[in-house]
Image (cartoon, rainbow, N blue to C red; front, side, top):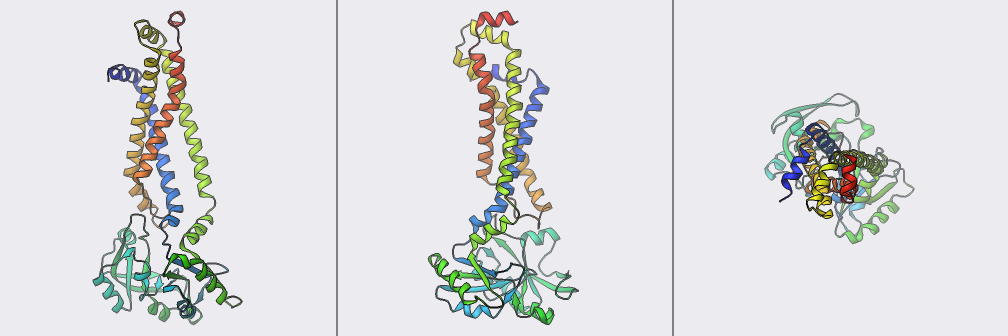
Length: 369
C-alpha cells in the first residue's frame, strides 16, 4: 500500500493517454465477452444436450420429411422409453413433448388448457416477450408454405427453460390442427423424431437399429445423439470456433502492442524520476513492481469497465438478435476468463518496460535527462 500514491500519481500524469488506454481495454474486453458468448451460443447446444435423447431425421437432409408411421416401430425397439415428433412450422406431439423435454417447463394448468384446445399454442418466454404476447391472446400467423394463408392460434401457455441457456424461442401447437390445415401431400409427414432412451448406454445400439429398420425405404433415416446432432448443426455455419480464435488473437496482440507501447513511453518519460528513486534507495524489485502495478491497474480497471458494459449490453443484443442466434448468456465463468485475460495482457505489457526500468543505472539515467 505504501506505493499506491506513487502508482496513481504516475497514472494520472497524462489523463488523456490514460483514458485512451482504458478505452482500448474496455473495447477489447467487450469484444472478448461478445465473442465468448457467441461461441457458446453456437457450441453450447452439445453441452446442454440430454444423454438420454436421440434425434432421427431424413438421411438426405433435415429439411426433408419422414413418415409419422415410423413412430410405432421406433417405440417397439428395446431401450426406447418415449418418442415425440416435431416439424419446422411448430406442429408437435402434445402427448409426449413435456416428458421428452422436461427442461422446458409449462405449468400444469396452462398445459391442460392447451390439450383441450384444438387451436391452442404454447410459446417460449423469449418469443412471447419479443412480440408482447400474453396468455389468452389470439395470434394469427401467416405462412407461405403448407398452402399459404393465415393460421389462427389461442395462446394457452408460455414455457420457460430450467437453465438460462435453454431455448425459449419455440412455438408449439397441436399436431392434429396441423394435419387438418395442410394440403394432402403433407399429411402423415413429420420433420424429425426425438427419441428418449431408458439409458444413455443403449444410444449406439438404438440409433443403429432405427436406421437399419428403415434402410432402403423411400425415407431412409439418420439417427444420432442429441449432442452429435447439435454439433453437426453448428458445423453448417462454418468453423465458428476457428473464426473466433483468429479474431480473439488479433484483439490480444493489438491490445498488447497498444498497452506495451504506452508503458514503454511512460517509463521513458520518467527516466530521471526513476533514477532519483534508485538514488534514494529504491531496490530494483521495487522499480519493477511500480511499473507492473501501473500496467495491471490499467488492465484491471479497463477490463472491469469493458465487462460491465458487456453485461449491460448482452440482454439488448440478445433481444435484437432473437431468432437469429441462440440465447446470448454471459456467464460468471466468461466474466472471470475475461478478467484473467485483461490481467494477463496487463502483465505482459508491463514486464519488458519494467525490466528496462529495473536495469536502469543511475549515472546513465542522469546523462539522458
